Image (tube, rainbow, N blue to C red; front, side, top):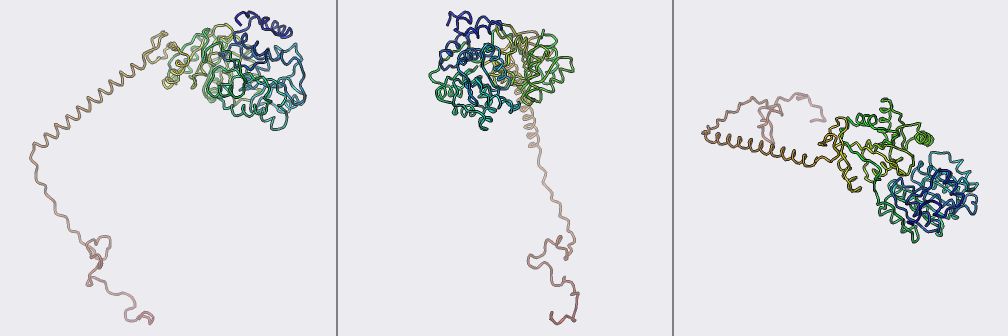
Length: 480
C-alpha cells in the first residue's frame, strides 16, 4: 500500500478515473489508498479515520465500479448506504453523482422531511444505490415499497454517530432483512464497544484499516481556548469574528434554542449568519447549506447535526460557542476546518461550569488546550495574551484554605468569648428566685371554658344549679 501514489495505482475503471480528473483529484488520501483496493476485492472492511480524511470517497469510488455491471430491478435496490443525518446522506448522494457521471447508475435518496411519493416512484423504477437514514428506510419498508433480498453491498457510515443518536436497534432490524451473502463496509471515527459488537455480528472476517488514532485532532488546526463569563460570551464571539480573518466559519451551540438567539444577535451586529438545526424543514436546511458551500453565507450557526461528515471546502474557522458535553464531538466539530491539507483555526468559549468538559477533551486528545485571554475576558487566572494553562485549581484550593482558616479563627474567637462570659457568670452569687402568687380569678360556674376546677364527674354543685325553667307543674302527660 505504501507504493500507491495516484488514483491510477488503485485499479479504478477508466470512467471513474475520468470523473476524478474532472474533479481535480490526483492523489488519494491515506484512508482511500488503504480501503479502495480491499473493497474492490469484495472484502468486508472496517475503516477508522478522523473526520475530514475522505472516508466518503473511499467507499463511493469502488462501489461505482462494482455496480457498473448488472442492472437493478423494480423495488429491489442493489446496494444500501446508511447515514445518521439527512445532510450526510445528501453528501453521499452528491459523491455518487460526481464520481459516477460516466456510469449509467441510478440512485434514490430516502430521508425524512421530503415528499415520500417521489421516493416511492424511484424505488418502483429500480435503483442501483439506495442512500437512506434508518427511520425513513424502515418506514418505506413497512409500507411494502421495497424488497431488500437482492442487496449486494451494505455501507454503515459514521457508525459511532449512529450509536450516539440511538439508531443501533434500527440498524440491527434493517440488517436482519438483508441476505447473509453480501459485502459489508463500516466506517467510524471511533470504536466504542457497541460499534465493535456490530462489526463482530454483521461483518465476516473484515479487514481493518486505520490511518489515525481515534479522536485525534488534525495537526493542521490551531486550537484556542478562552475562559469567559456567560454574559460576555456573545460580546467575545463578536470580537473574535472581527479580529480574526474569517472567510467562513461553523459556530456550534449545544442547544437548539440558543442557535436562533445567537443567530439573531450576529445579524444585528452586521454579520452574514444563518441557523441550521434538526427542527428546521429539510428544504430550508438544504438551501442554507448550499448557500454556505457557495460562499453566499459567512457564518453557519448550528448544532452537532452539521458536525459529522459534511464536506465544505475551505472553512477557515470553527467556533465552539458552547463546549460540547461529549469529548468526541469536539474532534468532529473542529474537523470541519483544516481539511485536505489546508490549515484552520478553532476557538472554544468556556465558562466556569465547563471545566469538567474541557478536562475530558484534553484527556481524549491527550493534549492541553492553549488558553488565551480575549478582549478583557478575564480568563480565570490565564496570563494576558498567553498560551499556557493557568493554575486554576491551585488558586481555588488556596482560596478555600484561606476561607477555612478564617472560619476556624472566627469560631475559636467566639468560643473563647462564650467561655469568658460563662466564667463571669459563675463568679457572681445567685439570687434566690421569688415566685409571684398566682392571681385568683372569679370562676363562673356555668361557663365550661373557665371552670377548670370543677369535679370531673359532677361539674356543678347542687346549690348552684339554676331553677327549672319550662312547663313547671303543667307538664304534658307523655312527659310525666
